[in-house]
Image 1 (tube, rainbow over the protein chains, first blue to last red):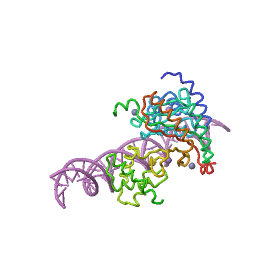
Image 2: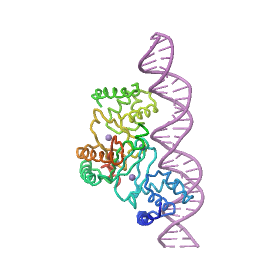
Image 3: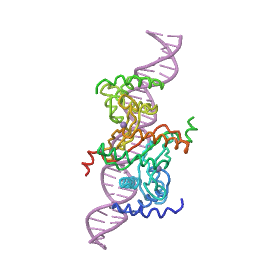
Image 4: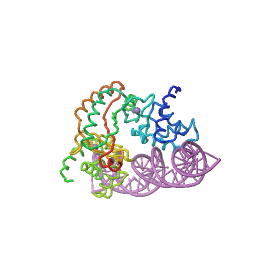
Length: 158
Length: 158
DNA sequence: ATGAAAATGATTACCATTTCCATTATAGTT
DNA sequence: AACTATAATGGAAATGGTAATCATTTTCAT
Ligand SMILES: [Mn+2]
Ligand SMILES: [Mn+2]
Ligand SMILES: [Zn+2]
Ligand SMILES: [Zn+2]
């Protein structure tokens, strides 16, 4: 969209470098694409967007970069059931807030929501503590998914 | 294990038939395998188990049956991140209780848990109501996932 | 500038799942 | 029981997202 997000990347770059990775042109643009999108992009979608700005990029590099970003926690990788992974910046100018997803079982689109997060956090914190003790499981993250039919698909399916 | 679950299938068969599908030998055995397992089986794992009882079965039929079972809600289909779908009976002698999962990000195994379900149900009911109104989204189910390292992998990774 | 290490991209391989299609089983009707 | 329309099946081939290979290029500390 605009270039107002430009500032948001600065710390992202730093965090990427901080993990010991070199910030190359391709990686830089991949980060920009992620930071400037409010969608849940697939690897191929990211590839096309990056390619329009930097035609030398290879799909392999996109996959490799996304793997790094996922492993370092800078990006969340999701499976919403449409046969391809979906990626989203874990923090940033738009996606700063912790959120969860509504997934349409028909069109496979995901809607972000942040409602009820406070109560949820409270419950999850408690649950997390109990579970990690009971199962001796070191919890590092969580995900809440609601499945159903989006407004559009409700009408279409009827 | 034992054959005490034999009774559990009766209503399953009925529910399957009730959806307008013919209960063939292959489908029957697939249901038995699911009902007698407490694991999260992949299509191939199910195929091998069925095959040992009914060698005529084809992997295609397993996939097709699992798709029917998933669409009719008799079976839950999960992606725990190991590159293949995992299936679990949604109700039945063992899996009657509503539960959620701890997923090891290393070995990709899933642990069932039923702790804190009461509080969770309460919160989710409220959340569900709020979300379905706000987004005009018809919610049909939900899933809570905790990610982390299982006891075994904590030691191995170290 | 130089060299070791990291990164890249084109190609190929992989592999879970789907599609195709000819054959067979099912269940209702005569 | 024979007929028939329809559903189900299974083997083979195709599909498609992702991972591995490898020769080449880029990066960065020296
Ligand atoms: Mn999101
Ligand atoms: Mn389970
Ligand atoms: Zn939809
Ligand atoms: Zn593990």
